Amino acid sequence: MMDYYLMEPDNNINSPLKFTDYFNFHNKNTDAVIESDITEKTKLIDYARPIDHNTFYHMFSDKIKDVIGGYDENIIFYGVFVTSYNKKRQYAYWRIDTLKLKRVMIENANEIRKVHEIEFSRNQIENSLIFCIVKSKHDYIAVREDLAESILRRCPIGIALKRLAVL
Image (cartoon, helix red, strand yellow):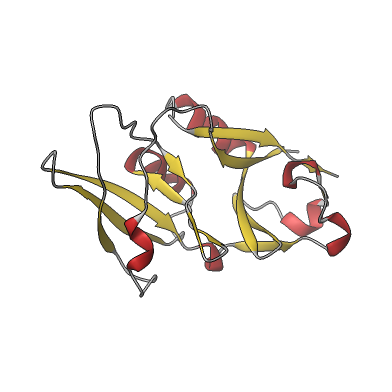
């Protein structure tokens, strides 16, 4: 049986790319072009989880989107094209549509526990490649071990994986 891992941004990255302007874009079910101030110190990361109005958005680089898409071509991504006018460059990121993923709801009894400390049953997950954990109106991404290993082989920047307790 495969293990599962919670995907989180790596908070040890100095000066990661910020997605501050994205949330002015009202139609979230389409591609977007946003502006960001990118300097020489800005680190282009492979995963970001910006938050706006209590909603997490899960953004992946081309490299990680291609890995996920290679395992499941039915997963829906929307392009977020980050434009840096000062550097005259544009960077492609991909927001995953978490509403189309398998969703596992966390009961109120587990509210005080961190997401990666909560125990899940295999019946809840149903051998999903990637699924969404919903806790306190926030959603989190979890991936199956084979996908996690494939992502790690690409030496991602800005991704932290924590093993989930699956019974």
